[in-house]
Picture 1 (tube, helix red, strand yellow):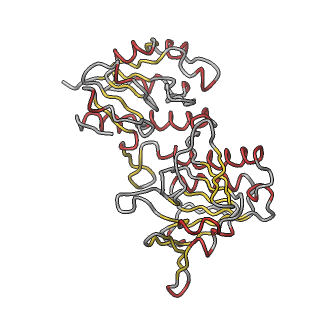
Picture 2 (tube, rainbow, N blue to C red):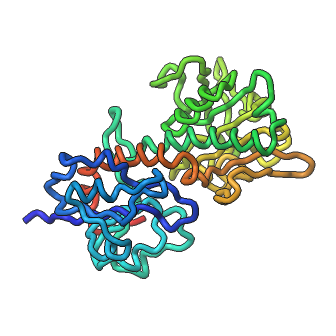
Picture 3 (cartoon, one colour):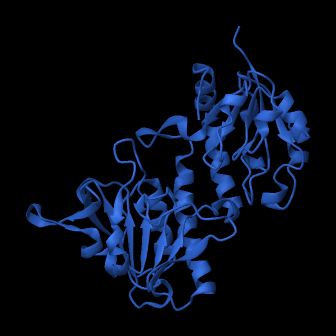
Length: 354
C-alpha cells in the first residue's frame, strides 16, 4: 500500500529577520489539495501574517486543511517544510522529514536526532530543458534583491558613492545563471547605464540575453580570473574591467572542482574604485575575493577597509527581510507546482543528508 503523508508548513522561521512564508494562500486550490500522496495539509496558526499583513487561516480552514499551533504541527506532520529551520527537529516525531535550507545553522543537528533532513538545494527538477534546483527561480529573486537593496542602502548611507552618482555607471556581473540574470534584470530596471556580463560560455552560446547588455567570456585560472580576448589572448579581469566598475555582482556558484574562485586577488583591493559597491548574493567566505563573507542581518551593507582604501560590500544575507512577499510568491509557486518531485525525493532516499 502506498504511504500517504501529513504535510506541514511552518509559517515563520525563528531565524532572525526571516520574513518569508513558504506558501502564498491563493496558490493552494482544491485541485492542488487532491494529491494522491498527501492525506492532509497542516498549517501553522496565523499563517503568513508577518509576510502579507493578514492571516490565511480562514482560507485554509475553508479548504479543509488543519490550522494548529507550531508544536502540534511538528508532532502531527510526516513531512515539515520550514524555509529556515531553527529547532523544529526537537519536536518532530521519529522518522519524519524536515525540509528547508540549513546553511544558516552553526552546528549540524543530524547526529543528535532520529528524523531525516532534506535540503531544498538537493531537490532537482527538469525546467527549461535542463536539470535545476527545485527553487531555481528563487536564485533570480536573490540577484534582483541584492542589487535593489544595495542601491537603496547606499542612497541612504553614502549618496556620493560612484554606484549612485557616477555618470555612465558601469556594472559588471560575474556569472549568468539564474542568479546573474536576476541581478542583470534589476540593474537594467535601476537605470544603470552600462552593464557587462561575464560567463564561462561564449556569448554566442548564451540563451535569454537581455537587450542593452554586453556579454563577454571569462576563464578561471590559479588565484585569478581572466577575460578571454581575441586571438587567444587573455587579461586578468581586475585589470581589464573590474578596476573601472562602479558596481560588481558576484553571481558565480562554487562547485566541487572550484570551491573558491578569485576575481579580486589579495594584492588588488586598492585597484577597485573608492567606495564602489561589491554585491555578493553567494556570500561564501573567500569566494570571489578574500574579503567576501556572510554579512549580519542587522547590517546588510558595510564598509570594507584596507589600509587607506574602502569599498561597500553586501554579503546579501538579509534577503529574507527584503521584498519578502515577492520572494514568498515565487517560492510558493515552485513548491506547489513541483510537489511531486519533492515527495519523490523524500520517498526515494530514506537517508537524505543536509
